[in-house]
Image 1 (cartoon, rainbow, N blue to C red):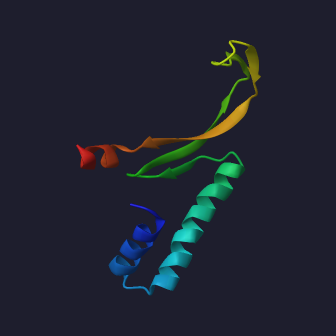
Image 2: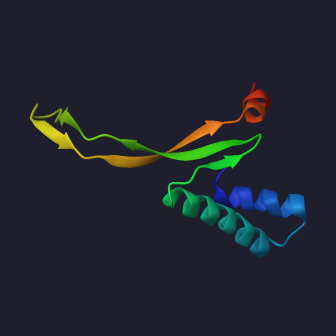
Length: 90
C-alpha cells in the first residue's frame, strides 16, 4: 500500500472526498514528523510507537579499497508495533 492507496482507503471508510482525505492523511503524517523532530515519542495505543534513536559515530571500512572511514553520528526513526497490531497480523 502506498500513500495514494491509504488516502483512497481513508476516503472510502470515512466517506470524505479524496481531497479532504489527503489533507487528513498529510496532517497525521505532519504531526508525527513534527513530534519526532522535537525528539518526542509518538504512541498510538494498539498500533505502535515511533521514537528517534541516535547511532553513535563509528569506524567502518570501504569494501572496495579496505580503507578505514569515519561514520558520523546519525539519528533514525524506530517503530515498535503494539500488541494489537502484532496479534492482528499473526
